Length: 183
Image (tube, one colour):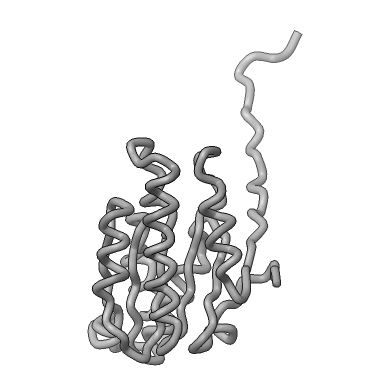
């Protein structure tokens, strides 16, 4: 099921996998901050996109205990698809939400051939399935991916119980002022 509005919080449930196709807009910091206000959350960052400063700002708007609430957020990073497999494999089964940011970003390396990427994604998905058994799991995916690896995006979406998409709001173009009158 595809949903356009990206209010993931009510949809996060143990036993289901949510996928958000997004360009890491305001959704991610808001979601992480809200989860941290409620308790522990693990963020597995595959896109090196963890917005720490923005999350701290959002927490500060709702609580004066920014330091103690920030300690609810456990961030682990992977910079390659091999590290992502290891990261997911080594993630312990706690009962609190798991957010996987930019899962397929680590698969964009053109040194990793599509067949190898497929094999590694199979391992990742099996570990994600294991995590779903005890905690809510949400994955963010960048919609832009190398053409030869688009099948990875499809595989992750096929695994999802719900898929959320966002439509990027167009930014109004500023008009360039001319210093010279048109002739």
